[in-house]
Image (tube, rainbow, N blue to C red; front, side, top):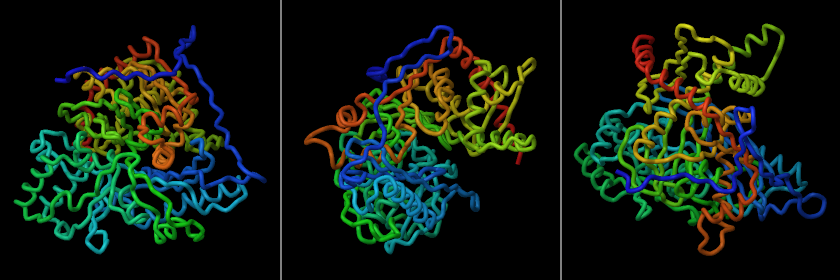
Length: 564
């Protein structure tokens, strides 16, 4: 049992209910227009920092000025591929994407400020958490990159969870390693280094085998007291794997965990040439510890303090609540740590954008047949807006959108499925509301577990593409969670913005200043925030939808058992 419940409180946000409206919101404005320094619009890049995040569908690079405001950006689109049953990205795509996103950022900065970009104050790299990237002593990759999306490690994850009395999700690196050992994969005896995507890209740019605390806690459990891998669990793991003939110690092959603000190395000459094909980027730039997308979400939304929470909505959707205390084992809740080492609960939904994009594509084809061309972004904006006109309970419809497995609600495979009961109101608003409510309903399943354990969620920050259409995604989440949902203007910059702030913290913090205080005083003071609060009718409607969602879980399970 928890000694106390964790209560989430966010300050400096004004919430107003507008008479006659379903939602209320208030905006506190901050001037965030790009500033130009020096004569002729030149920028002093030496006071700027860069953050680069390898997301599931896009790499993004963001540059911040000395006031931590975004002034330039670049991106590179990519997609994971299912190859021989494994969701993966090719290693050459890592490098191609890095160069592409940085080249766009460099071009953007030089066009705005009229001077060449050669050096910045600090850089940070982040990426999708978890997964499996294994290398031999010569740095040769030993197996395909197995991303967070793979659910192929159930035997290993189950055995480790029992061994540690700690929930080990299938996507965690230690589960992938142990599953490979159990299967007797030939490469495991050659492993000299195992890391995440962020850890690997940091290594090729700096030569340092390190990892931020949050990303490391998605490889193997972290002890919040020592800020290192849990020693007792590590010993148990080493004894277990030794019985299977694995001779390496876990800590010898995993990257060293580092807290936010610690020295994580410098850009090497080789790293500079890899990142900038023009050859103008200078070596020697300090790097902050590489982090996972959970950490960058916390930082980008100022949700790092104990009791704060945020939801990231992209290809996947996940909520992170920083509890700052030990959490009991539960398969619906994953326990990681914040960039500063506080315990946090993650509710991870594997599926969000894929099914939504699929439906949008169908409507786009129909629009094209009518001669009304619309790009994907416009289509999604129209459909998300239309969803707000639907009934609070989606008019009797229920939609399941798993393209891949969804462990939080017990789906072992992905089979998108739309159903409607007798008397359902089959309208476009209700249809698309049901479609976008699927990832939120998965999150609600985890929130139910937290509430039963005494954790109160009173405010959530939202970020990511799911929340791009004004108020729509926030309304769905507020209806599901029963609390206000806020979004910052800068949250649209995503994880690249979050890791850029970690880079800024590395080089701009005052002596002894915590990350939490740095963000409060130097980044988010007076930030522009929009808050959406669902009405009681909206909340009650989602409760009815969620009851239907839970009652029909067996139909979805039958679908993937029967539909091959």
